[in-house]
Image 1 (tube, helix red, strand yellow):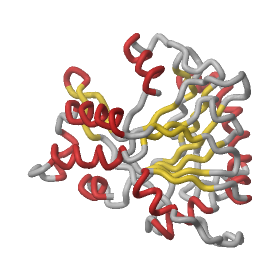
Image 2 (cartoon, helix red, strand yellow):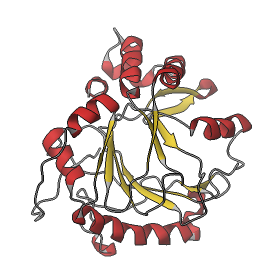
Image 3 (cartoon, helix red, strand yellow):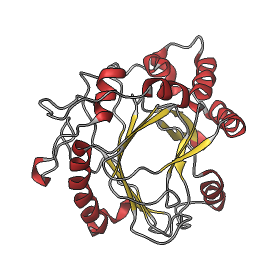
Length: 281
């Protein structure tokens, strides 16, 4: 189990933030402007991302007819985000300040980052995806909530992981219509309410064995009916933090051809590892 521990000894000045905690609680996400410390990390990590995506040893991470490199937990980073062998420094900047100062994650450590890369042909229709799933990827950006898995009989869903947050660090400067990250604002509260009702009266240590498929799909539809979908496409040196219960996905590439959009994602578990704590975040 891992989460975030801010790096020690950072020498950049801390600047006043807007009400980003209020944005995070209300919208389910907040964004941070480019900062030299974050830029240094992203630039170093981008070199690794470019290499690993071309490495035949990692071909199994390609999806959607080789238009999306999934790269889950592929960065061999330490708790502070650094990779000494790759000259990637500890991750620092306003986003990690927000996580430690505003969300209270002083004692947590980063998990191994996902390196997600989408190309200008995204999404292609790969053999691994049904026609219905592909249509959903086009129409709804493959919207989902992290931490669920489909392994129950009939590929029904259950709770698998209890993340504390999602931290996105762009590794490229792709434009807003080039495979942007999409989040449904306020969706975290819709999902929270639905799961609170489903798990009511059930001990938290039993939640991971419960079939939540119908609860999830009904709540997801309520999100589509009531919440605004916002595309997020910040550039190098920026960052964004999303609530772990928020519905999100990747928009189809609509703009002109260009370099791939690459993003590093951290999804550390809550320290407690307790589903009840996760649901109350």
